[in-house]
Image (tube, rainbow, N blue to C red; front, side):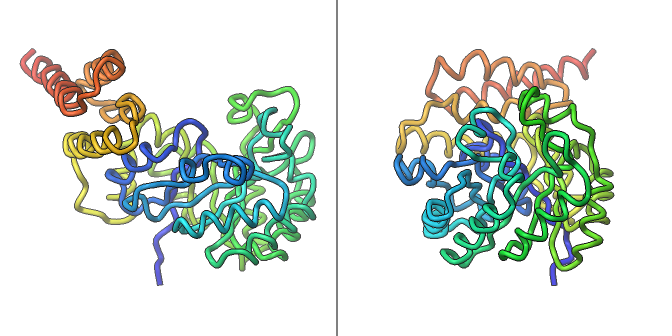
Length: 330
């Protein structure tokens, strides 16, 4: 039996694309990765392969779906399973206006019966786990009865795993950015749900940005989901690998950077991906280290000017190490 907590990187729009996930996987072999939210409309009526294609190295990787029509979600979940995703995650937590207009995200928490129907439809269509990522409430409601009712009805429909962002979502009046910080964190409410539903798996999310925080949450819940900390300071995932998973084979920052060179070159050759689309996720690799500014500056200023991944990243490394050597000499 695996007693290790389930640690994951949150699905983040415009950030956790396939290039970001390959980069994160090099740093952290055991952390679970999630796609950006993909809508059912994009899969059924758009270029499904572009949205679903990924690298085999990304496993374990989950596909997050956005939608509200049970039949469309079932079809999309089946497509995800056929592509080999390890989990289908249903977005019931995004508070943006654009998403709400499509009846997607946190607004669905007001309709637990519909969410339950969506879960039933997806579970019927696939054999991989179907999970839900949600908030603890919406607008003026973030009390125990509201969240209890939602979890009860959705779990009765066959969902065993809930990823709880420990804030409610304000659907009118706050931007998505403000919704990540203004509503107060209510981990006490998450603990209450975990106590009341011991057969269910609860993973928590919301301002988890230190190893101590992860260990505290892992003692109370099945796991923790890391958001922007993992993106802006990606090598934090290496600390997680060593401390949480006992991994003693961590790649150095330099090795990770050099490993991304053949990946970027292959993406350019096979898919016509601009180099900057890959390297933009790597800017924080040296965060907190001497030479971090030199690394970030060189990539930021030159990624759009060249398609030579080898020269770009090796020169950025040289500049980062030169800055360190200058400081050491001083």
